[in-house]
Image (tube, rainbow, N blue to C red; front, top):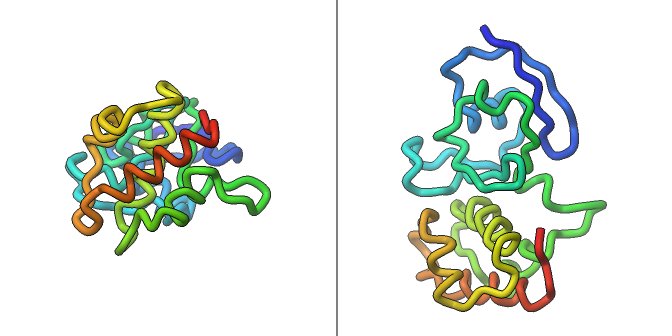
Length: 156
């Protein structure tokens, strides 16, 4: 067992974990952060994307021990004081989801994109979300939602 300390959605946790435990399983099973879905377990789909120290990572490709000392934000940590994050609101308003399985990962990847490029073109949005797959929407409304959030000036 290895001892880790992580801050997740503003709360600090210290736990003993198996060295092989994936971050996605730690978040869901130990911390109850079930808003982060388990998708493919191979880092292909991006559904499990979270922010780790301000950058998006696929939590199925990160060991919990690698997150020791990190500040992690999940989809559940984006909303503040009961108010949706502007990207969450934009996804809702632009109908950028159908089944919703990919939505947490798409939003978390978009947060990172807008942090590094606050005014992306449509092509830059498509490239920025390239590692996140959606089987339902065809991406048009997802791109529209990110563009809409960017126009409101959201950068984190």
